[in-house]
Length: 261
Image (tube, rainbow, N blue to C red; front, side):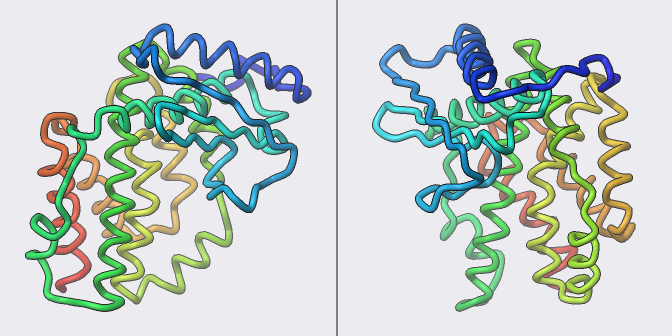
């Protein structure tokens, strides 16, 4: 898939608002959001808001049958319309999972605690790993949902825009590579974006995207690349039906490869 197919970019906040409404309406017409769910869009001119944990240019929050989508205009004006659609699609699809909590439950104490014997800061680090892996698995499910409704192209544009080679990230990895537990957190974190990218390759929608992702992460050791591939293989086994079991399996890979060596 060629990113040069769409050279247009969003020129101003008014165009951003118009496209946002259009893409949200298009998504909701294809995914059965409950009619009782209210969707609000809040636009922020600045980079961030002290009351919001900004993890990207779009942040969605679901509370009491009200879904609020926060848009950070400075980061979004200038990107292509398909990239905006993919970004909104992922935010909405991820929140769709929150509407079905029974499918995506797990018990940390019963399912993860017996796998290790630590407390204090070590326990906190394990919780971080599991949280990152949970997000990655849900991102994979959300991406599959979008592919199923024919939105694979916007998803490709979004991740192509999102993948950002960083000298600082490579330097940070070099500093932490010798510390197995911190390295494990790092890998669980980048797995969150790697999972949908690998899925786009597997489905044949954008095989070159994964190649680009690897080129942007050449600093990873061969062992860590193998771990990421193993995580994707484990997670891509009907995760909707076997969510908790697959999540435990993901942590077991991290545990065996990095934590118990």
